[in-house]
Length: 99
Figure (tube, rainbow, N blue to C red):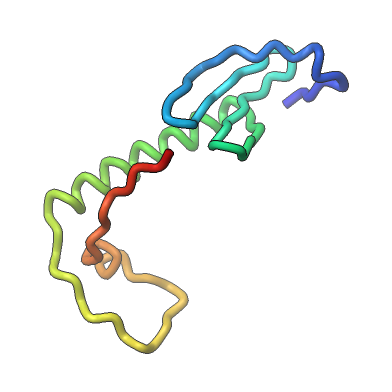
């Protein structure tokens, strides 16, 4: 990333804009800016591509969990730092629309 010393030289190009999420690209800075509501994160283009790949994998996995929900297990009083993947798949997740 090559941040410029003066924001006036930034030429933000809108890459995507939907439901309070925006992606801009500045060719002068070589930066992609991800806006999530009032939060703004500046990343390299390769980072955005990696995040997009991870989100797509998570979305596909979530689809699988929804298609084959397993019965929820009772919550144990004992807390563990690591969650077993098979245990995580058994939890029922309800989607929430975020504005």
